[in-house]
Length: 56
Image (cartoon, rainbow, N blue to C red; front, top):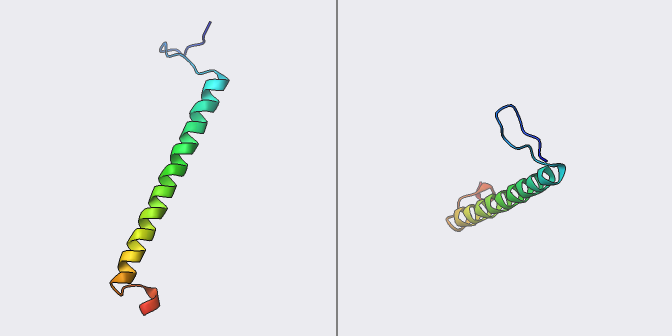
């Protein structure tokens, strides 16, 4: 037996909600890692061109 909302959509069980939350957290972490790596690559490219706060 499963619960559903007024529109007939099945409601997630506690275990299913926990799994969805875990997957979202993993995706957010992966996205943050990719963005950090991208920023580091860009900073390295700018430093190679002599552009950066160290150069004044």
